[in-house]
Length: 336
Image (tube, rainbow, N blue to C red; front, top):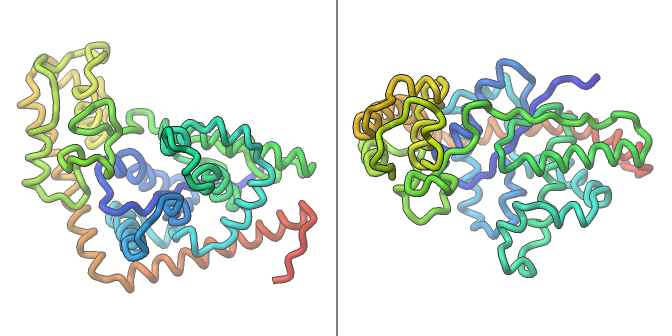
């Protein structure tokens, strides 16, 4: 039996937003009281697209500040940046040799990110899922919190674990990792288009609520958020084909830790102007303290560096021990 351990990683994109918080970080905070958790800032994944070196360093620190400001305990959890633990890259190469090209070609996220010009996409973007599998399995993680858009990558991780265990006849050396998918909300959509995921890359800043936005900015963005002319329904089936309405109601539910059905029961029949006032109050109450703490933590970069260094040492100890076993299983010799 494998020890229950959660692994998850967040790319250091900088200026994290409400979607990042509700879709991932809020769940991380809840999981830290139920599992042994390893949380990684996946800076190696970030460079599958070109990054300005100064921005990358800054974004790594902002991401760790966001983790801590949101309630992650650096003593209870292992928190570090991916590049500090070389075993991730070493195991990723081994998985490059275990995984099949056909598996990579079926990854829909590569097709979406590479677009029509996939011949010019980096090789790193293509084999990104193998590094993701290495991130998880180097710690023999048993559970991974994922959104809907990462389920295919997690399934690949399971396939790689099974193939490795079978190819090298090592029983269940790697666990077959299980997904942890939030029941109520895993994707937060744009405030301007309910069919698009909330994203930093969208041109309009009005499409997202950034975690460092102040009260006035949050109020304005929610008031301007796209809705329709119909009142809020009392039943869930009344949200069908109403993407923007469903998005705002889901956000309210997640911010308040309640079910969508409870929101509809309270606000059913009311117009969105009334609802938006309440949504704004909830967003300000939850997001502004986090944003203020992020700004405070970013003034003490040595403290953030210390958290990353301590976390890297803890992660490296686990990863090196497992990598030594993996080398022995496949017949490689490692003298250092």
